[in-house]
Length: 316
Image 1 (cartoon, helix red, strand yellow):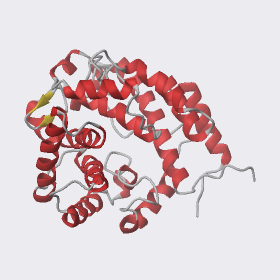
Image 2 (cartoon, rainbow, N blue to C red):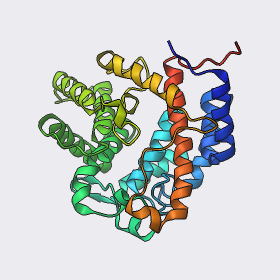
Image 3 (tube, one colour):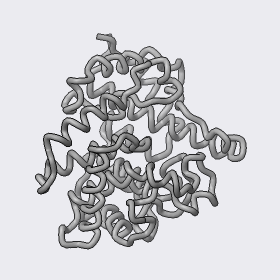
Image 4 (tube, one colour):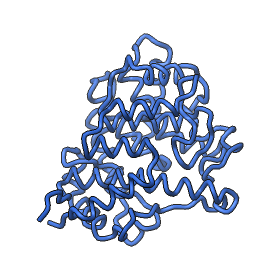
């Protein structure tokens, strides 16, 4: 079984320390050293706005300082990644306040892109487009609804709204094929929540079968395309404990070895996208975004390798 050696690991750590934001540095220390949740929380709070939502280019492809559902979800996933679930914390209470306000929400869910994105540097997919929103909001709405169903008072208005969205999304998952770029990831979070909470009037067996199919179909099996784009097993399967692992074990193994083999010397992995038509227009901002994303993705990849015991952290 191929493993990443200590020298390569230390090179990645050095790159993160030299190039990452304080947020990524704190996350690296939390996942791989002796860092604390509080260090991450203190930095993350700097990106939260007075309305409780998140902006301030926390998501490096969208430099909108105002709160957006997508950037707020980005913050929630950081909290989830460090296992922080104290819902009384000010960060969580602010997020609930923002989601309860109805801002950036429509009849189909929370908006993927919002109009003010266009006023600031951004990747083209974050440009406001109402037609695209209808599809691309699926994943964001599913994950935000899952958060609310898990943590918010069931008698609250926002809980009832989230439940309505959840039922519509599960029906969409079961009957349609176009779920947007983030749809399957959103469904995974929503189905997990529904099952854990044992919510009534859902077809549990049907959901389990359908999401398993979507995960397997969603993985790009042509490895040559991974350097450009395409979903890899790690986009859905984070550890051997994942219920989707057994059916996709071979592709997980392929990705683990691919990561070790393709790590550039004296650098971390490149990102697989640009800002396309906006790259020249916002060349300086994209250069910054690229470095930030490389740090974020390096941490994700190293966590994936660690979960599957592919890091050799002892001197030979």
